[in-house]
Length: 113
Length: 114
Image (cartoon, rainbow over all chains, first blue to last red; front, top):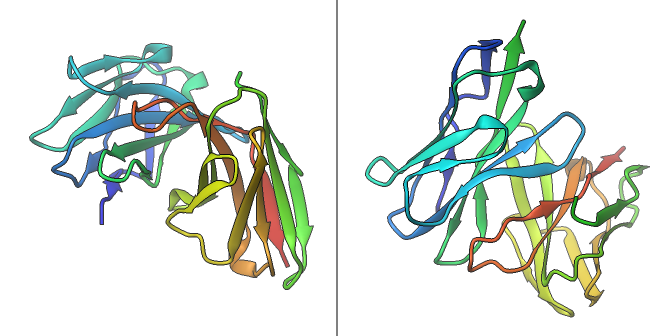
């Protein structure tokens, strides 16, 4: 079965420091890749997505992610985090075999003042 | 924000009782989805719909049924609620699947089965 692994359940980081949230997936077929964010007590919203083309994708709120096909990874980065980035971040992969989104378990980003 | 509402937003019910959750959209999107969110599991797809009266099972469909009689409404029914169905339920919509379209999420329904 296809799977998406977010290696860290929580990532604590100081405000204004850089952060990387890791995402790996198991697939050798064509995929679309997504990062969603969930702020406390809210639904999810799209941060960014990779469909094709440039492997570096820029999203909202200063986040970016890089698709690495050989390592089957799609890590999310931000050069300088703010307290407002406190949220849970979910990586998701859409396989073109069945067109169902497979979700990672999520990573909670904890910003320390 | 995409026009998606879920009702009720919170519900406490007893084991063995039927429960229906409603998702309503004003975007006229073709696809609608029901997910459950549990700590450590991310989101898991329960059922989805690709048109009126057209539905299919997701990863965790046992114990759940759905109906879609109108484009704008997608109902999730727990025929006989169990404690393992205590969760937060999210509805989502999208225009398509194959193009990699974004899914837009509702605010969620917190269901507690006692």
